[in-house]
Length: 118
Image (tube, rainbow, N blue to C red; front, side, top):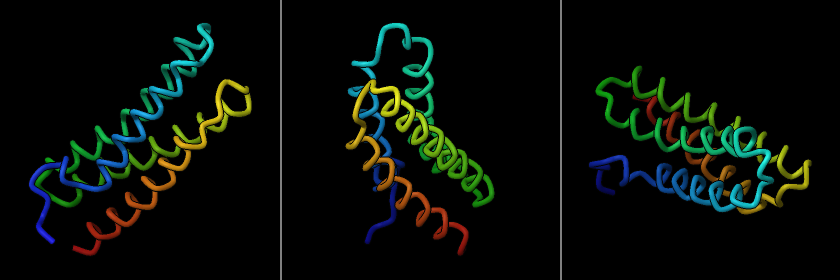
């Protein structure tokens, strides 16, 4: 397997990007009064995941890389809770987004473990 040349070559980034796109599609249907509340917060948390993966990829040492990948992991947990909240408030049924979040979490956890081994 060839080493990734850019963050776009990373499967974990691809899944995180798909997660953001799904969150945007889902939040289009949230109530208007959530525009500056849950809609904005969920989108920001989701965007933070692939953004921090991209930024971490550009760092030279593993300590810096891990800092950004850990932020991505925390943002993913934040977004996952917000999806649960959206479901409980009956704004949407975020099954697809939740599944993408779970897959991204699995990939990100394994990715972080592989960096720590070096």
